[in-house]
Amino acid sequence: DAGVTQSPTHLIKTRGQHVTLRCSPISGHKSVSWYQQVLGQGPQFIFQYYEKEERGRGNFPDRFSARQFPNYSSELNVNALLLGDSALYLCASSKTGWGEKLFFGSGTQLSVL
Amino acid sequence: GNSVTQMEGPVTLSEEAFLTINCTYTATGYPSLFWYVQYPGEGLQLLLKATKADDKGSNKGFEATYRKETTSFHLEKGSVQVSDSAVYFCALIETQGGSEKLVFGKGTKLTVNP
Image 1 (cartoon, rainbow over the protein chains, first blue to last red):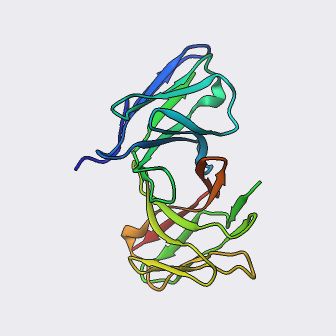
Image 2 (image 1 turned 135 degrees about the horizontal axis):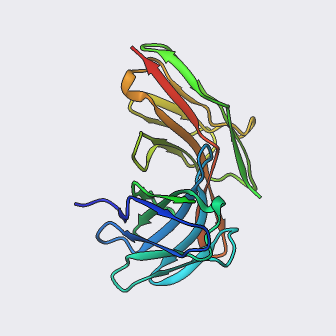
């Protein structure tokens, strides 16, 4: 079975632009979470979705938004990019998002110039 | 809020050396604790976990014991290999409302030389 897949692998944007990152969970997994990993730091929670509903949100500005589709894939959108948004964005999936092992994708490396 | 503190890296060892990576946490209650590993160019993989006090998690020769008295979850391995070179993250589960999230430490980079 395929693991969690994320696209694109790498992305370069300039300040002020908008970006969309995509995630396909493992088949049968209905929960997707997004994490931001800045170089030299641990991942920080951005969002959790389950059955297309937002279940939780981390301490990120409103420039960050996400959604989950009927096939349980997910998009993370970031508007008005800042240099500080440069990071590895990780997607993780699980069956219900509660009390279970999370499976992480390899991430999207976003560079904002 | 809850937090995790890991020993600063990087850590460089020779093959077959003993490894300890310290991890302490601050939390309300007794959350489940985890060690994740990140190999170069890859996402995070769960290495081991412990769900309650005095539990010992183990996997691939790595071990960690949940110590509520010292609020610690130190990672140990008796004999490291070159293939263990990676970044190791200690984490806890935090629940809020209907959501569940991982709170990570900053990570410790391990390099094992032959």
